[in-house]
Image (cartoon, rainbow, N blue to C red):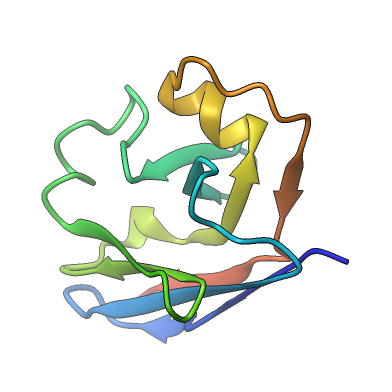
Length: 124
């Protein structure tokens, strides 16, 4: 059984930093497209890392950093200088959604796994 478990969210002030984690079990993340998405209230879910969506090419790219630890089968999202507009539920995804969002060619595995998300609230 595949499980993706996000952690690290919370309530922070503007300008603060957070590091989100997504630990996977039941699947080896290497060899599959992976990504961090977020969904703000009333908005569609969007990709933020490793390649941000077209809506936020600069603002997110300069503040958010994607990384991974293959030994721990975990991906991370380091978020710096957080803004109120970063408030959202952050999800990790493995498979087709990440592949299509990032334009990955040649990925044909019919898998698409999501974690339950972790809430990030940025407020003064």
